[in-house]
Image (cartoon, rainbow, N blue to C red):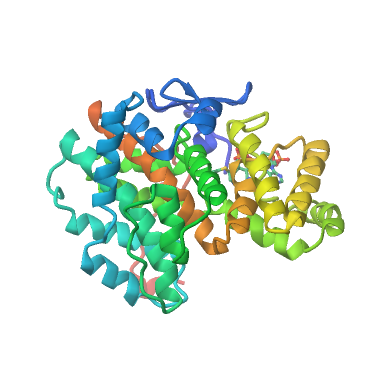
Length: 381
Ligand code: ACO
């Protein structure tokens, strides 16, 4: 893009460093590598909380009491089944449709059938947040079952959110290690301040459109490989590399070709992403347990090389890829699984936006031509 002259406003490409909202949901310190949800350190939450507790925290600004958590769990359980027309649309999608595209469509359809569809008050939007959190897990599992010609697995009321998701995906109850790993991954992915998809949700909400419109926008934004889509790209890269001994030579060649290495770099973190600390450890444990430690070892080689050569740290998507792979999740569901978690953060931000709303409408610096004369079509060219 041309450099603006001195009289034109300064364009901040990619809005880097621009502070666009007040928020109390997630604090990110990219220099110290610190991250908080509503004041609680992510390390503490990953060690002690459940995903359901974190969801409550993001929506209500405080940790739930036992009674409040039980009530939320009951609401989530009650919302797991999809309205039949929404399930029919998932089943009717082409078998080779991208799961993120089906998920985006399904959430839009769920908006039509939501019992609070015409109500944009906070109580209604909290109910929609809970409902969407339960439903998105069901949608993602149903997408995989449907494209493999299998019927959806009805949710199991005896299982928490993470375990029930794995159950609906595989048709068998997961063991405690897999359940705990997914629960922690969901906590780590639940929110991250004004990342691209959350910003997208807030922009939509700021027009006073509804929750489902905002979440549909967010899902479309999450899909891209520079954002949530990176976790799928990481795993495809590792599979292509194939062996630990090929890792560094392949990365060297990719960098020489000026290719970006997926799962590295971050707009905000200039040090270790605190989420990566957990995911690295989980990746080692999960890969070892499945007898496929090489995916972890390959990742470590790449991580060390990228830090030494490019001073780039890995981001949340790098080790989540091998965690999900070791959990047996199909690669093109990695980004939908990100959404299974991030729905809580997106909806919390929509609630926050509605609570103190102003239309988000920045300006563009015009760099196109001016004063052109209209030429009738048969006199052009
Ligand atoms: N591989 C190689 N070089 C990189 C990478 C990478 N992954 N990331 C950044 N760089 C380099 C760029 O080439 C650029 O170098 P230059 O100044 O010599 O041109 C410099 O670092 C700055 O990079 P930008 O792309 O300008 O940084 P920006 O803040 O705009 O982008 C982003 C951040 C999109 C995350 C970027 O680092 C990237 O593309 N990473 C790979 C995709 C990825 O992993 N995305 C997931 C992010 S986490 C999430 O969204 C959940």
